Length: 184
Image 1 (spheres, rainbow, N blue to C red):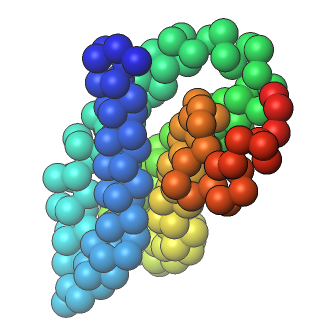
Image 2: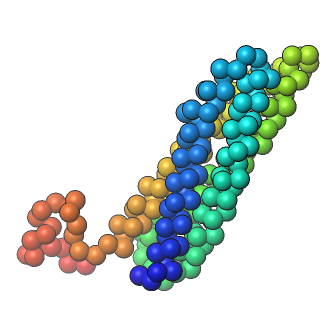
Image 3: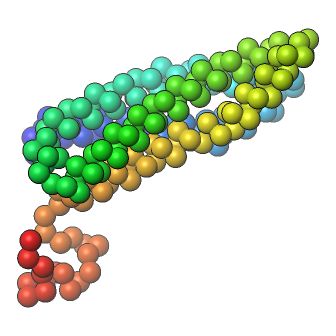
């Protein structure tokens, strides 16, 4: 493995960790903490400020994650084509990455709309209805991104195991004995 490959893989994992961690922290901490505001406008401003600060980091993480994923795929193209389990995992990972990007984008868009609706909800009944609908949508979307990116982390672990050669520390002891090894 070259230094370039190590840097690309590390970038891929770290950016996914940031994407996962940021969205999980938002769902588990920032959004519930914003409910401590005095009124709907105050709560919306608190959540908006937190996400506004995190947004550029999240966006950069997603972009670098996609670019590093393309670089890893290019580096492993032969293995992806020739090894069925790897090909299946890569297809699943690509679909899950697409879903994570779409859910992240929809959460961002819906969150911005929710902030606007909450600001107008005090005086506009239509904005109140829209705010209720968006709040319900956001309660689901806020957990979809960490779920999808956690799946990506699991698939990265699986793909890493596909590259491993000799039996490791966590394998059953019988696999370490030379006469018990399966032939590939």
